[in-house]
Image 1 (spheres, rainbow, N blue to C red):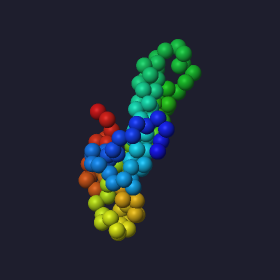
Image 2: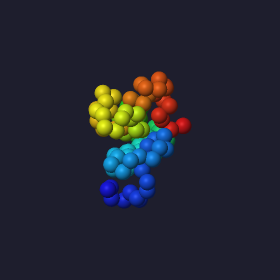
Image 3: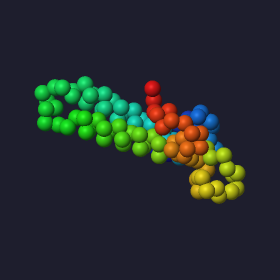
Image 4: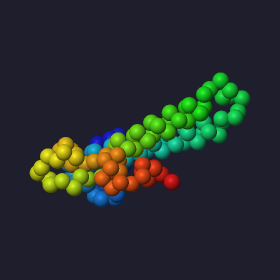
Length: 119
């Protein structure tokens, strides 16, 4: 279990309760989403400073792009939902993990990539 994370029944991104053996995986996902929220705060703070004298020597636009790229990479690569494979099988989609990432979910559902990002 992760330090500082309140023990709650684990759910995937679609709010489906996960089986006990995947609780640590989806609790880890929750931690990753908290990291993304922190990165959003850093992004907003830097964006507010973009035209200030203290940032004249910084390439703020590049920093903002880099932060966004890291955040999207975390969101799309982290556990997103349970795989729909049989419990006893090893499927090619999840490779036996029994969960799929945000990118895999998008490919399966053919949604726009931005749909995983918060509004």
